[in-house]
Image 1 (cartoon, rainbow, N blue to C red):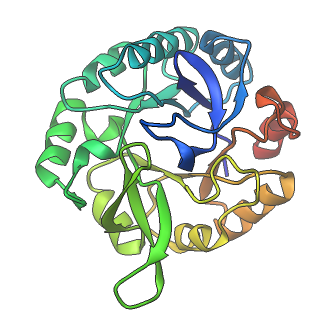
Image 2 (tube, rainbow, N blue to C red; image 1 turned 90 degrees about the horizontal axis):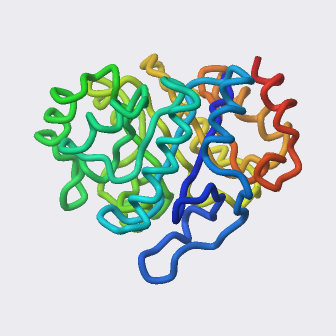
Length: 262
């Protein structure tokens, strides 16, 4: 289990938010706003040798705030070339630009869904544009009742505002790994709340035998939670942590987290 660092950028600033609260109308519930720019965190992660981090652009594509997010992300990637993957508003038209800025991968969700279903034409276009080895699929999800009256996890799009009809399960993971290098999966119901991890989701991820790397995010508040991820993820599931870290105003010492994962 590896620790994957993160930089979430909103209005050009490094922030930590409660992910499920993000909306176009009301903004988001903010946990933390850093006094440091994104470049500071790029240097920190490079110095600590923790590659494979995720930069997430939280503003709506096409806005001036989104352009500010991109500028901030570029500062981080300049400090740590190849050390980050980047997501948020990625399409086939702009994916190459993010790789040119220094990202190792682009992270995609919304672009490859249409009317709640996977758009395989768009997915194949992305693979043709950047290559499978440079593509991460974000399958962040929430749990709700399905058609037979039991709970399932459904992939969320549009900055976690819209449910799709696609489940996060072994079948979906096995199918989509033909199109990507790895997965990033936020448990949206607990993301940013520091209330403990989603054990049921982790059981699904830990028992999948497909082999592609998976990074879990959501709810981590303590090293006991990291123990749970290691156990239920069977050592195969990586972790990213935001609001709980001391560098983002939390209680978990950043260097101790780095040392734990190594």
